[in-house]
Amino acid sequence: MLIFVQFYYHYGQYCFSFSFANQRNAFQLVLGGPFLPHIESIIRDKAASMGSPVVSASDSGNRGTIKKFSVLNGKPCQICDIVIEVAKDLNLSCKLHDVKLQMLGSHQLQNAATATCVVLCLRNLGWRISDESIRLGLESTYLLGRSQFLTSQEAEALGLTGATILLDGAHTKESAEALMSTLQMAFPEAPLTFIVAMASDKDHIGFAKYILSGVQVEAVILTEAAIAGGVTRITLTSSLRQSWIQASEELGIGVVHDGMAEYNERLKDHHRLPVRSERNLVDGRKIILATESSLKGSLRTANKILASKGDQKGIIVITGSLHIISSVLTSLAG
Figure 1 (tube, helix red, strand yellow):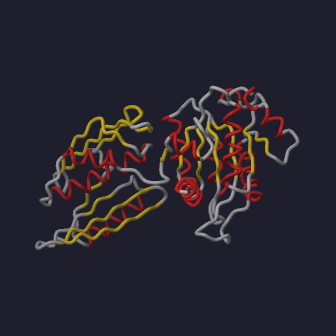
Figure 2 (figure 1 turned 45 degrees about the horizontal axis):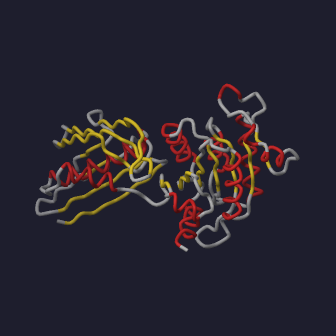
Figure 3 (figure 1 turned 180 degrees about the horizontal axis):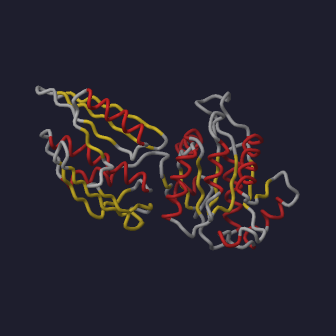
């Protein structure tokens, strides 16, 4: 049997096209999503022209539920139920309860449901795959730089002893929205400090708006990271700062940045300020907006902010580009 795989990505929505070719020339198409209507229409029309049955992970018969967040081997995970009941074109069925997904967020649950549908299609073609094997595969899955929490030893190696550090390569406004939604669900009370570097061809303002809108955001540290080993697509911190200031002004959210006289005083007294919430946006509370020219400098500033919070546990999120994630992982590798 030959298997041809095509992968589509559109604004955080996924489509896996699996073509299974054997003696009977059987073809099956598995869709992720949910898709924008015109996108799904294009894909389904293409499938119809090929005579391919379509399985959609977003069909009403399929259900995915995040029940709670827990800790697995020292790292956060989400406990989920995944139920697949497909009756149209193909008969596929699977019920998995209390699946421990290392990939966090409702979008990652949807990806897990899509992967489950793919495996069920293979099983429908005669592959011997048990439900427990599907569970084991889902629970073992992780991606570097996507919802990746560092171990305590890795945090210590970065000079951030005791910190919870999340690496996520989100770099579009859609992925920023998914990131903030995940953080809000998993850590609704935890104060957040972001370290952000971005390529020059991204929507800086759109990305910044979703991050700044988070009610638990305490500080954002803007820095620079080489893009594909070069400097031509780097966004300088001065330019990035202007985008974030503009985003904050459009949102009506106050920031204090290192171009302002009150910056050092605010940073020094950061732990004395009231926790930011939707109810006290008008009480003078401002998000710290810092700039650092290097990842090392950003980590130092993040550590300073973390230390100022005393016993209050916060999370440091490194994001904006897969290239800054690569820099972190490279530094850990020595």
